[in-house]
Length: 60
Image 1 (cartoon, rainbow, N blue to C red):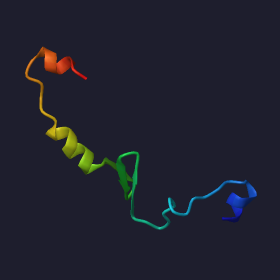
Image 2: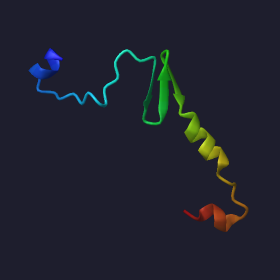
Image 3: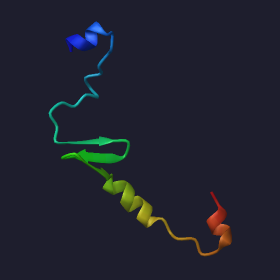
């Protein structure tokens, strides 16, 4: 914390997690030096219905 104060960096302690085994960052889970996509996001993408025709495919 002294280094952060010396360089005038602010730390938001509500957002800081120290000594945790797993963190979520930008929709990825990082654990044991492995980066994996968030499983909830993967499930949500798999639930999206596939388009049946060209018009459904081009809709945004």
